[in-house]
Length: 168
Image (cartoon, rainbow, N blue to C red; front, side):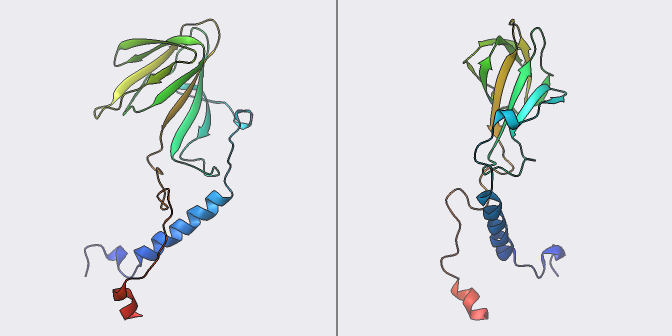
């Protein structure tokens, strides 16, 4: 008996192919253009956000990134967050600053802020120091679904193993 009895009698290769086919079907009817006007604002512990791409949003054609817009009112700030880092933030409008591990980095519209990826994580908070809203477009890898089974280039069984054919 195997140390993993739940795997006995299964054909994991066939399950991988079935998952590939399921992903292809889902992506064939996926949304190609995500429009800001169609996205609801969400108020959460980080502030006001609109999610373009998120691991829980399944009806878009590509799911390799997580993308959201964050709006910070004048004189306000985001929540403070400790996480791994690895985000790219495009400042759509406004001006302010971000603290990364206690160090202040000023930004203004059309700047790009690169949050470092650190094994031990980083502590981040965004502040609006301008007169109007600050809007930040935040992008990071969706490491849960970075490539899918198709691996970005297709995944096809072109020839069966002769060992497999022997058992047939």
